[in-house]
Length: 449
Image (tube, rainbow, N blue to C red; front, side, top):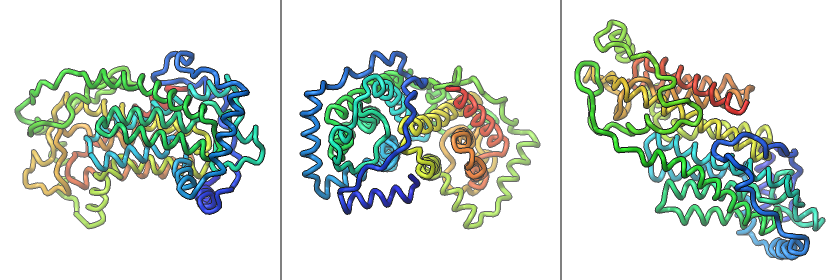
């Protein structure tokens, strides 16, 4: 179902409340054997068997009663959570929360990797359980049941949307502890919506929420290792060619655990150009010579925004999923999102390792009169973080959606150039960053080959 057809379907659900569930392609039944990032023992987190036939009949009556009593608010709740793959809304929620309470770029990339890895791993385990138990959906036991949500062409137990909700809400509650209950309430709303829609039994969603939470706890245990790193020692090298400033952002990101890189320094680039070299002087002149038109400055500002840095890549990928029907294959969609976020996470670690190894100066340190489009970021310059993370995620998207490879690489190229236009980077820093991003993406894409 393409994006426009899907929007029409959701509107019809809200207006009519009686549209039958559309037929979806069969989601990969072998997804339960796909490789996972943190789960090492699928059997240890596989949910117990679903209720027996008698209990299922009791649950079916409960579903039928709920379906018969659906009102407009219930239909809107169903339509909201039914949009896209089970990952889709949670990615949107995570970015919305970051807009409300902005974090540093490395921490946003870290959040997205934790979120998407948890959802993906939990869905792999869910698919193992689905085909181990092969429980029929409610509509199979009650022909004519009004199902008003698209659902995956797969067994019912556990609910894939509840699995994703349990995983995502638990990760977000860890990252934003003051808002934990809000995220948990959202997860329960997801679960309730699937029963109201007639797509699942109550025990499907209960098992799904619990499975998602268990997998998320394994992801959180990994995150806690990074959170427990000793505080940065506060030592900033001084002398010609070094970065000048105080309280640089996220120096410990250089020590976080990568997902695919052997170590944070595994792809460390050669040292930057010497501060007194003619090559660097020429690159400074390139920055100084930029003609600051409205169009150039607008693009530089956009690529500095949350939408440019973080969100646009996921929007691009989500649209491709809608177009190609991948939103009806929860595990495949979650896999793509996880690969994207892991690539950015590891690229930023490699980038920060180099930044805090070389402590390289910014253009403004060489020419204090330089007018930048926005304030120069408060951390060392080499290599460019935008070049690292933009090329990393673009290469993954290009591999996942090859028909759009040229378009997404063009987007990465604009992100790359925007740092020169803004006056905050030298050309060789962009080259080194792109090399890191592409290399990291290649390792991510080789992860599940």
